[in-house]
Image (cartoon, rainbow, N blue to C red):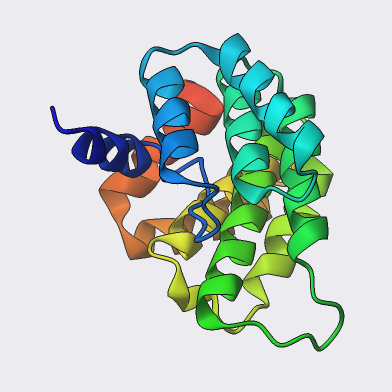
Amino acid sequence: MNDMIRILMIVITTSLFVPQYTYSQNNKSDEIFANLYEQEKWDEMIEYSNRILSADSLNINAYKFLSEAYRQKKDYGSAINSLSKILVITYKGEGGKYTAEEMKSFLDTQIVLGNLLYRNKEYQRAVDMLEQTLEVEYLELIDNSKLFIYCNLSASYYKLDDNKKANHYADLAIQINEERAINILRELIGNENSY
């Protein structure tokens, strides 16, 4: 398989959890990350990311892949830490001007961070992050963003024993795409609730 097609396929299959950035270090580095991801070599991906970050502490791609490697290892705390650094690096301050692509990347990161907070059992922080993200006017830039936010909010409120809000957000997700919403909710909270 052509290297570029393989890289593209990995990016597409991980797009639910890995935010997509326009910040690319170089094709060689992207190819190394793609190979490590494809081979599920999470420890090597962490080592390679850290090597890049020791030379360039503002490298968005390295933080992105570092977070993904930690997510795959179910080390959600470390994944959250890595992804949070991306938000700090890319934040332009109150009233800062973002291009549409920068805003999409920033929102992608917030959505993924909300999901990681949920997976790390930090339900209230997940709710806070995701409800804040819903208030952003450019949210429509990200395909299926509201569906994922609503599902994560529903699951978080379910874990916080607020069934009224959990059902509210589940209903909103189901209105967008019933089959996908049910599948996402089942993946997040299991089959303990019948959506």
